[in-house]
Length: 459
Image (cartoon, rainbow, N blue to C red):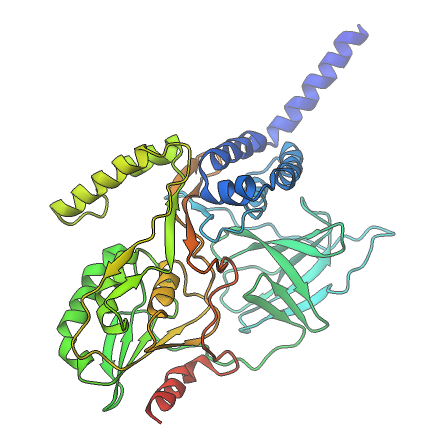
């Protein structure tokens, strides 16, 4: 009789848990871990090659222990972001599946138990651009004892009290966090504190007092060429997406005479999130100062079975000619020779047919949202002595590239599994740090940058 009672209570306990369980978080996390360990270039580079197996195993164990306790889809998606945060890989991200609208974040109220600690950054904080404010409060959350909730939001996208940030107290007394963006994608960041600022990651800054807000930039994200003065032209390249390549090529060809008629050219790649290296080839003849150029970085593909199959399936995705198709077929055949290893690095000197009368001075402007292959453009262009760079550190999303989608349908998300690592000629490490400009303009209003550069080029 006692045995039957215990069995009944155990069954009821499991049933009640399942009633509130929206997903099997541990199953999803383990599938993600398996695919990352088999296929992700940054895992092979940072864990296997850099001999960090022990660190990774500890991180993985903590994630799995949390996954067992998680019942909701939203908390499990947060755990995905925490798991991926081990890898310093800006191309390792996830997004919601098509036609899925994630539910709004819950409204959270302050709950302090007797004896609970108080942290110095509790209270009201204002976001850097003045668009919203948050309040850090004590409460019990999935990942810690403190959260930040919305106080006011001018855009009306958030309601007062909705969860915005979950803080995670680390053993050394510092904090990490899970930050929920406007599109309800969570991302894990480190937290930095001073008496008057709360800094989430590198770019999300909150202040104790409201700030005098300046418009950061009024430049539009459209492809543009125009004359700024008798000596200087301006070229805006908002994207290097390969689907955009033909428009870039056409604009350059159409304005060839204008470009070569002036001694100065300003190339603006602020907010350019990258795309493909092929998209900027038509501008290189105006920028480089030698027709023999060694790429300052080399790509090396991790050729797992899944990655090979993906490259094979998608080889014709961006081909525009028969020769493009032949090249892709040859590349896939080349990959087959290196299954379960990285492809070797082969030094390559490219020949570029330079323009006869190119501009004598090139200024390249970039900001913290300039990323990926746009950063590759900065590195290649900077090999030319004609080039000087301006702005602020770029995003730092250039160490890894190419990604294969991993669908987690129970969570309604797709995770990007990076398949390629980049090796830099001078052994630089830009990931999550960014490329520093020759002339740092961060103390100036971004709307003033072009005028400042123009004056410097023409003085």
